[in-house]
Image 1: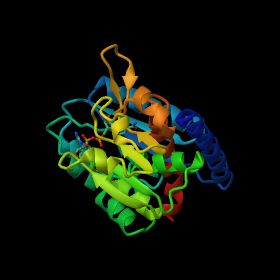
Image 2: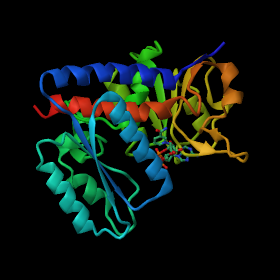
Image 3: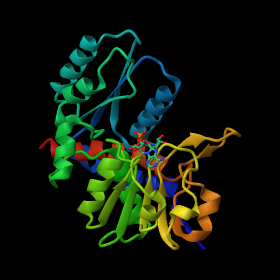
Length: 281
Ligand code: NAD
């Protein structure tokens, strides 16, 4: 019987550990502060921002909230980021994406001080990860490593296939798996014979953004499957990139959607905020 990797429970354990670390810092007179910036009032973004603030509150991180109008100019946003870069009380700066079309996201990400880049999207953070230096790590793939480790999945020496090569999931995922001594293959939309490639995996990580695309024909018997995708199906129910029911009898462990990778992302943002204290020393 396959094991269900419970992201909800693991993220709670992690948040409780972080709460203790925050309390220890506070006892030393160190307060951790995250600045959260949202431009416009996209509904999904408001929900994400709300959840991030709630997590801060739970852990004991002070959050500063900047809710800017949709027509805020790029210059105004960059000015605010620069102000926060220079504010010693602020440990982390998070700009909720996506941004309105008139604002260049890359420019915004690159303006955030790399020492405060708790999303791990800055080119300096990405570079540090790729050469094994200390830095912030993109929260979703960072959370997947935590899920694998805490569910007792050995990564060292394993064949890992990551399907998807985005800057925020697939690429950093492959670097993190390499760091854990896995043999890593990255597959994407131009990969030939995807089923055969995916079937090599002891650990298959799926981040393609296509509802229930991966069925048992892509999965080796006994593999561990991590589903990053998140969608609504025809009945408005949440589902992933993996056809869970079809794949389940063939795997040794799998993450559900919801309740798998999703809850880990915010927990890892919190971990990055706590790590910021060390990174900024
Ligand atoms: P993306 O669209 O940026 O990248 C998708 C990748 O999949 C691309 O590299 C593309 O080459 C590859 N791909 C697309 N179709 C393919 C196919 N048929 N065969 C092989 N490869 C294919 O997406 P992303 O930002 O990496 O996100 C992927 C999914 O994960 C989405 O469903 C997204 O909503 C979800 N997501 C979830 C979380 C979370 O916290 N749970 C975080 C980020 C993303």
